[in-house]
Image 1 (cartoon, rainbow, N blue to C red):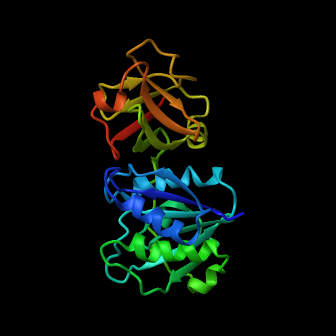
Image 2 (cartoon, rainbow, N blue to C red):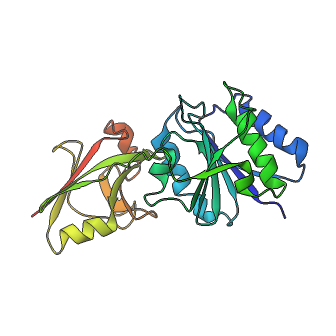
Length: 258
């Protein structure tokens, strides 16, 4: 059975890009399995793409090829790379996205050496060529040269002192819940047995406890909980927290311990 190919892009669903990409692969492999993770990454938003794929790829079988077509037209000296990590393969532009996805170094990095670049649409040139060769059983090392050097963009970490954690919103989901970079492990380690208050963007938006579900607070009330990713999430029962509070990625969430 051929490996699965996933596709994560910043393309508008009304554009022809996804259809052309899939058609070019199916020309060579009619039985290819192509799964579209999302085409709704905001244009050129590398951190958002990294967040989506980082929290998705582990649910697919090992050996899957994940194509990441976000800001895929490379700037000078960037190029395209094939990354191996945890038995999965990732194909994208060397624009920092893989540094955001993987805090630890990948198992292998291969710089793609192909001439069919299509400067304004590399996904239809380089990426489909790699995918077709991958589906044909070609070894990853046959597609370029192995290297250790790639663009390592560092994820934004919470700042911590003895009595405060300052985190940031890293993703707004479909329900306008604001997901932060504060993990449950970090919160518990700093909190100990102390009481705390959570301030969202300003001192006027205050939460005094961690909820277990979205229905733990009265309808229309702001709440905080740890979601399925074990990250602190700001939500509102029956409401759109991010929209009402004008939250976006990089908005501040501060936890003060007493």
